[in-house]
Image 1 (cartoon, protein in one colour):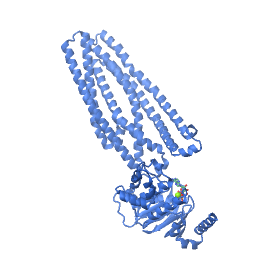
Image 2 (cartoon, rainbow, N blue to C red):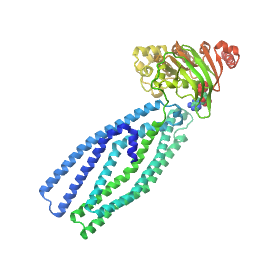
Image 3 (cartoon, rainbow, N blue to C red):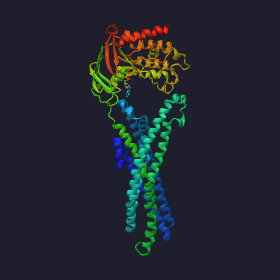
Length: 577
Ligand SMILES: Nc1ncnc2c1ncn2[C@@H]1O[C@H](COP(=O)(O)OP(=O)(O)OP(=O)(O)O)[C@@H](O)[C@H]1O
Ligand SMILES: [Mg+2]
């Protein structure tokens, strides 16, 4: 069956750990059958007037034992299934978390955050729900129903046949309800993803939205997503309803069939009283089992959509790399005829070639949108080049393992992300085993020791999620301390400090100077000092390198660079006046 196949595909080898709970569910169904038969026997004997105290004791003992065994089995099964289900879903989360980390960042452009968040939270929880609850219930219902049907045939083939025909008629209806559940459940899940994306967007942009009075329902994107979800949820229920109601109707006919057949067969002498009683009891039991199946099946189909989503997220190809990745000794960086586009047919970089010698600084300058941040992102392999190659230490970065690459590069970007953790631990991200002494040293070099020490809890101060309890400059200096403590041979940084006051800017520049010292640096430069002091300057324009050389060489070329320097000088004069 489809559901079992999905479980196997998602859980892989781990699905074997579910064999025991599945087997225990079957045993439970057998024991349930035992209790059911004992009860039928009791009623038959009561009606026949042959019920004695001894029999009462015997049946009570049998029922007591069966009950006890079932209770023990249930508790074992429950613990096992919870433990194994939780284990499988924890592994799925870890695996997916790791997998996502290895994906091209383009994936996050195309796929809304909502879908990923849904997969990591709701989908895995739903999948766990299949493993820990629905699967066992399904197996038990199916097994018990099969046994009851067999029992029905043994008591009276006429009733067995009638029940089978009714079930066969109802079966396609159940399948249709499952199909509807899967189809409309899929739409409803997409709507949930959209709601999550919009909520994340809303929370992230709350300041802007308040400023523009776009709160609550006035923020149409959020409001729309709620309305769509409401519509899709109703559609889901309405789509399933006719089929599950019809399934319920057809299977509930098993009971009246028993009520008509049992006395009829008894009166025509085909069955005796005992069989008539058994038949009636079977009718009740079978129709109630079918009612459970009728609601369980579409629910399982709905939940199995979660398994599909997990598989889809896993199937996204990670960036390729070689396992036997080399350990680098030199850290020169080289771009060779690199073309790149984020979106198909919208080229952003054209035939970019340059090399950076170890221990030197290369400054990237150029107008907004010329591709400076893109170049830095490509070196960190957030994306892969469309054409050409990027090498570090003579080795194509696509052949280096992501971990080696990450180890060798320290990045300081404009949008600093701090974890909801202590300041010390936020710096420690750069070097997980760093001592407190090293952390303080890095903080001193990054000009943040002073403000950290002034906080009531010092280095143990908790930082709000995303770093929102610190000022922009403070966050940036902590991110520089983080990069400093990493002590990676290659440093990539974005020097833009537009939103900072002069004091803050000075501190940050001091911190950046400490970070760049003796490293192979590529910097998106804004300070004249950095630009003039760079060993090499690359002037970018519309994704091409227009000019290349050091300060003197570029001035002599008398091109874009010379004009920019002249304009800056002019701007300075104006601002002084
Ligand atoms: N994630 C992305 N998806 C699609 N296009 C992008 C993406 N990031 C940047 N671009 C486009 O790529 C081009 C280069 O952008 P990039 O960020 O590299 O410019 P930049 O030189 O760093 O500009 P700035 O000085 O404003 O930071 C721009 O046209 C931009 O619109
Ligand atoms: Mg940029």
